[in-house]
Image: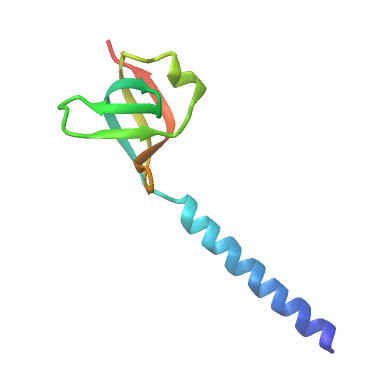
Amino acid sequence: MKRNSLWQGLTVIFVLLALIALIGCSATEQTFTGNIEKTETGLFLKTSDGSSTYRIEYKPDLVAMEGKSVKLTGSLMDREAGKTIRVVNFEVLE
């Protein structure tokens, strides 16, 4: 009898953790346009109008885009280091 309640308890905990993880991963995707800048502290996107700068979560493909105008699609996260874009897709603008 105790084994069943232990398994039920573990199952409930697992389901709750899975829901929390799902909620955390479901950030809304947004589109950002600007220029890629590389500094000693990382990779950044400076918006086209120059009003905002966002840290870019490290993506090897984007390092080669330094100095280029790009359109990034991803989710915006508020991190200790500042607003960070988790990039899903990107395209170079001409």
